[in-house]
Image 1 (cartoon, rainbow, N blue to C red):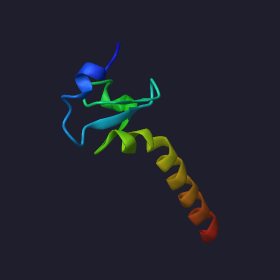
Image 2 (spheres, rainbow, N blue to C red):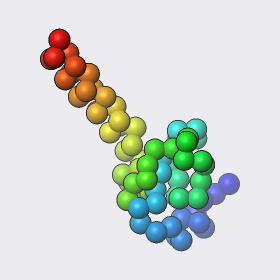
Image 3 (cartoon, helix red, strand yellow):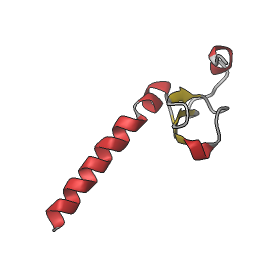
Image 4 (cartoon, helix red, strand yellow):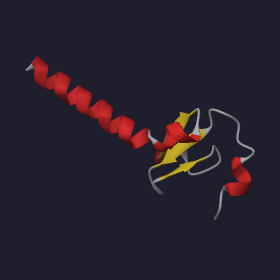
Length: 67
């Protein structure tokens, strides 16, 4: 199913990254339990996994410094 027709009607702040389908979705998509977000732009949602990986690395490094 294409989201092209629906995306035009989405207000800002309503972009999500679906972990089930590994893609960006507008507000009306999969259940929130399967998504990361919301993000204010489609581009921000597309970078959700990379930001999460970067944060995890930072936290792991901080934990190592505390040991």
